[in-house]
Length: 164
Image (tube, rainbow, N blue to C red):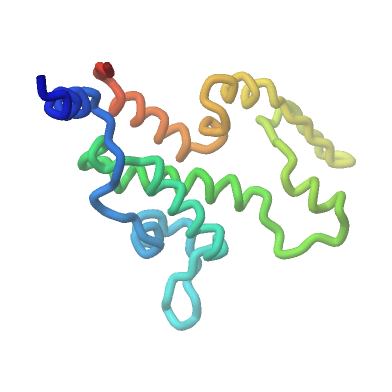
């Protein structure tokens, strides 16, 4: 019996894909999600996420989103993945902080506004919805990009695999 032939068939039947055909780039992200850019006086669009951070998010997406699995939705899924992490990053972004407390507060979790007052300006947040929503999908429910990606991932992942 030729075991190499058997494992080749089992590998193909398992539906496990290990590499991408294409690579998503910073230019693709700027084109697909212009809301993360600002137009310079020269007319060029510069990403609001620092390049080193954006390239890390792109690298993570290229490792996580397989083109052979997503097919025509691949580019959209890649952009959603990167936009999700970019939005989370920008929520806490500040060019600098005056104190450790200010830096720590930049990462504070804000929920839905549950009450607000005008006199002496008071706002209360309800974090229960975010905490309950993230129990199952982690931080993916924290942005609309993450919610779209999870919704699409559920559709892409329908169907079975058989691994021996």
